[in-house]
Amino acid sequence: MVAILLLGFSSCSQRALKNKVQETLKSKIEALHEDSLAMERDHFYSPEILPSLYQKDGEPITVKWDSKENVEQFVNFIRTINQDGLNPEDYHLTQIEKLYNKMVSTRNTEAEEIVRLELLLTDAFLLLSSHLARGKTDAETIDPQWNAARRDLQIEWNQFLDSTLTLKNVTKNLRKLSPNHHEYDNLRKALAIYQQLAENGGWQRIETNLQKMEFGMTHPDVAMLRKRLSVTQGEIRPDSADANYFDRTLESHVKIFQTRNGLTSDGVIGRQTIEILNIPIEERIATIEINLERWRWLSEDLGQRYIIVNIANFELQAFENDTLVLVSDAIVGRPYRKTPVFSSLMTYLVLNPDWTVPPTILRNDVIPEVAKNQNYLTEKRMRVITNAGKEVDPSTIDWSRANKSGFPYMIRQDPGADNALGRVKFMFPNPHNVYIHDTPTRNLFSRTDRTFSSGCIRINKPIELTHWLLSSDPAWTPGNIKRVLDQGRQRTVHLNKPVHVHIIYLTAMATEDGAAYFRRDVYDRDNQLLTALRKKHLSEETTE
Image (cartoon, rainbow, N blue to C red):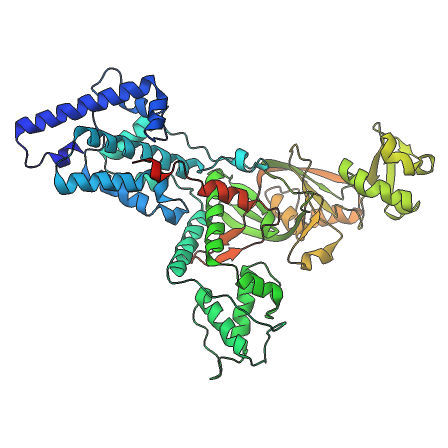
């Protein structure tokens, strides 16, 4: 910084300014070291860390930002940090630009201003680095149910800052802190597209009295629909000369829009599709920003072989060496029995499992059903079992009082085609008693909104997942797996290569080309995170 200002000054003036800056910086750091509240009064964000970056084993306290290239790289990086869904003004941008421009343009700056700019740059660098490396918000505070493997880069701040500035690698080193996930990069591309759309005016609401719009109809509102879809999906020219005609081209684009927004892809514009079409672009941008933050929370290392279940997308994906090898539709917990967000390690699976009814389902569902229908247990092939494993005659139990008096037994469903867990369950130890499993209720997979379980995850490709999990074990060929399943007897199979499982919650995704996919916030988790993301550390009005 000082070097930038010394051009054209005499050697005496240069020495005087250098000495004054060094004395001022030393005084400031010493004061801050003794009283971190002074740092807060000066509106810095890292009162505990800043002094330690400048005091090193008795060495003279000197400026770090003495290169014009470093300053300008960093300022440009802050200016564009909105491409990561972060706010440039959270990083002292206005103050830094004001001070820096004054220094460069007038070369008539007080040592106090030089030191202030020095500390603002370092403070902004620390804060921005931390936000890229771990997220701006704290996952456990914002969403206590988010317990997925956390990203936690171990950064030695002295070394990181000094090496970055010495090598003049500000942009490169800061970008390295961003999540190394393709999905994060894809969402950044989507955000850039939507930010540009917003700058161009976004899209207009579709106001129509039609109950639906579909192929074959002609109406002026069809032209309005065509214009709206053209904003996000490129120009949609009519097959005929009539823009009011709902043709096959428009129908195909409607289906694309519905797929990207988690709707039934039937090509018909009904009230629900209109509602989604009319979501303002600002809300879509906010949703992308929210999910970029969730990726900043998530661990860099998901494992060599791993499974991701995206609750909001009702989907399971299996990966090997970061290559997608399997996709399965999923059913997740109802809003009042939410599937939790967490990471674990799958160690075994069970073929032809029996099912011990969990306490919540036992209390809320099974016992009331038995009280109404004495044949319920027989119809469901369920048995009453003591904790010691002894079977109990259900007719000896007063089911009308079972919940009131405290039910001392377990209820277990035998293996079979109608077993609630289907033919396979996949086990990964966790405190939530949640696992992945097959289901006999296959018709629910045809729904687009699949919040039907009591917290566990049902999938529609259990056999395919079993084959992949056991593919490295020569004893478990597809033929052997089928043979055991056909026998109908329960069999536990331990994986010779345990697989990481990450159950997460993402309401926005994107493809390599930045095409955005949005999902309904089924558990109402987005708004609280957005509020925290948009919260400013300090008001810019108080920093002058």
